[in-house]
Length: 567
Picture (cartoon, rainbow, N blue to C red):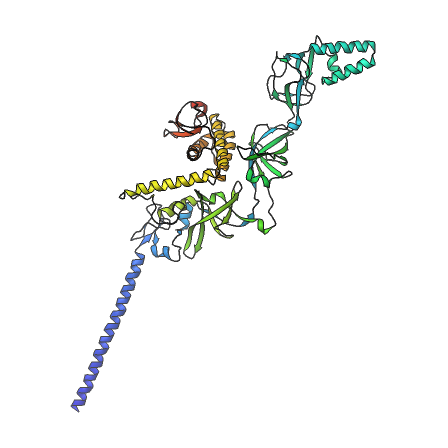
């Protein structure tokens, strides 16, 4: 009996001990697991970063030392984000002034813009010539541009030949000789005179009258000149209508036709419209452009010949799906050599981020460019702030415009590695080769661009802001045709000083382009003013050795010197 009791107690004790052992083991394991999980959670939350600058890593929350934004847990940055993309918070996008648009299908024939100038309507001009030998005794016109009325005396000529004709007319009249009168009248008409002109002749002095209302568009003589038979004295233009002459580049010639309506923008005047009446079949070999003509009406004579203009051609969308094209603003595309890239905006539950996409571009208008590949309709792309995003991509070792493969770039600040300089130099040479190759394929466009740049320089020399703006727009357009980065738009310029500041960087780009390929043949001179750019000095190109300073104009016209030449 005692034996059975002992067995019972022994078994119960064994079970109790086993239970305690198992319980201790299980609870210890669960506790360790909880501790491990808690430690892991603490580790994830202990690293804080910036959505705008992911290279920032801190072990506690706070502000980003670069942009001042609130730091967020690094784990939230990595969930579901493309490793090649740049993630940006709403605040970061606002700081970078990022703007986007959804790519849609637009007609390949988008609006086209042109530049040109107003000219005299040659169909409404009259030439005044002397059909006989004479001397200008009195000239009542002093300069071109003077307004005249029909029948107004504009000059007095001493014409002995016409005096003889008057004597013959009087004799025939006295004799009542019809045959002689008819012969003399015919002779008067051949001189483009009237019988009353001959009858008003006094002492061989003939009064020359204007045949129409208008202004003197050209004056070829002065008082006291002896004139020959058939010599042109002056031209009179009727300015009630003008010609708007625009430049149409070779690639756009098949997109403009007679009858197309253009909207003409004239500085300080209301916009006017007119229809194309003529497109020249002859292409200018230097500019690779042809002239198109639009007749515009000017009943109040407030529009003046010589004024620079811009024109817009509104084209309707093509109904054929084959003619549809993906168009994006030019500001969305970043160019480097022959590569073109855009930044596409992507979004998921964790936020907004941007990824670089390489694209192939096609034809372009003044504001939009066609995307042949790399994007699809419905994609959202960055139209403003792309450079800021690209800079962050480079800092974060993500794929970028200059470093398409991502990773550490040769431009990094690794001062401990002396080989960096060699790599950077090699990279610069490679970029120079790309630029030179791209330019050599477009010699005519480069020549046109350099010539337009020279016109812009001359306009700045003359302190002519209105003319400078018109030519600057042509230069920007020329850069876009070469797939080069353009500068600020004309309507963003705050006066001639702002344009001169822009001209500094523009000149550097044109100088680099001319050094890579000088298609003009003649020597081009690099000149420099040490006072420009707030005492830092600035360069420009000139076709002449004579220094004429575009940065100061008349106030310091001769400031500068020739520092180099391009043959």
